Image (tube, rainbow, N blue to C red; front, side, top):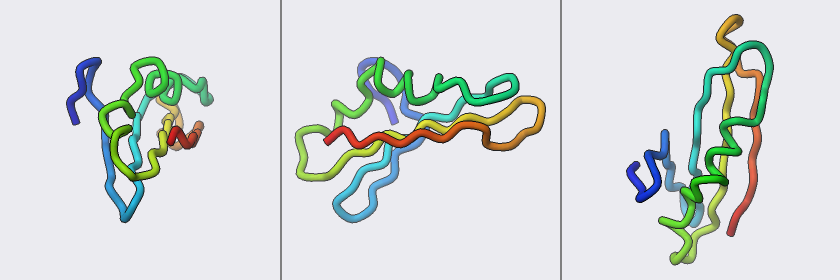
Length: 77
């Protein structure tokens, strides 16, 4: 999903909601890099004009354990 500030890793439309997801690989534990990128680049602006609720999901995976080590959700609209 392309925006004027970069590429969204995944966008899911479900009913009246839009889920914008960013995936990051980190060293050992969650560092909140994924949710920070979503907010910094304002990826939700592309969907802000509609009547849908927009949620940001930052998901981080450990390079070592290959499991999810960080998961953040924020509603932006």
